[in-house]
Length: 280
Image 1 (cartoon, rainbow, N blue to C red):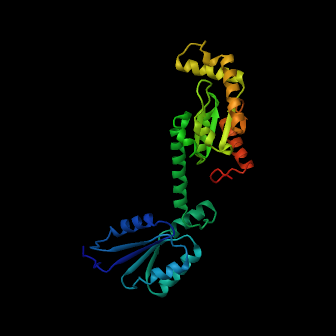
Image 2: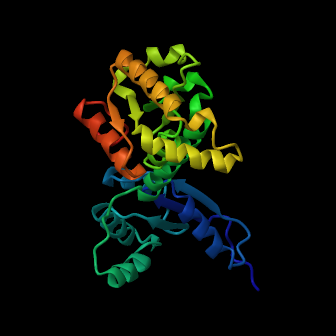
Image 3: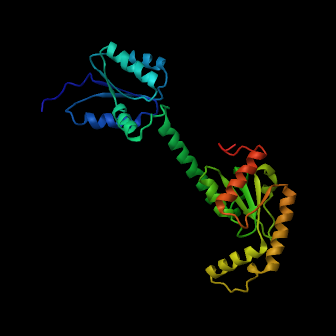
């Protein structure tokens, strides 16, 4: 195969996002030709016509190929018109895909730049929130209370951990603290705004059944104090006292699914004007 003189070949990648995908596509295509050398330059986050003019200043008609992934129609049309006027080869890496998908789904693309980046950011926020919930679960490290978006408090088996994980999947950082009569709450709990603290309570008789099942799962005896009505009432009264001191809202999780309790928590936050992520 004859070598293609490529020492002057310049590939300009123009993208309204990072442009990494477009660059990889360009390299994959170029690898199919016997190019000895080429120069790829990436122009990221291009969303205005003025940026196109600046980029075209470095493009020489004879030795430049432009490959682009632009979804803002006005900017894309301008680039295509200008490259045709200047006799510069330009390749739209998105149009054929978008056209097929538009026909398949029967709807127009939204035409908003950087959607992949936004999706990636959303994903990483969720992962961060999940890792946060695990790290600061069950009062493991009270230093996390000040970093949390929401702090859940309540006695054992009041859905603190399931709620923390559910809210984490909504990109909300949640720490939770168990309330036990024999253990003083961490001092950090009293340093947190009452707006971000939610108390969880429950019906004592429903809690007995839940704790009995927990005891069985742990292989303990049925008569353990953990599942006695006297112990549960003592814990609930202690928790109620703490919640009154903190002046925090309290919800009863007795007959509620985790999703319902989470919805109530978020609604409480909205009502008092506390901004939780994007959910205000």
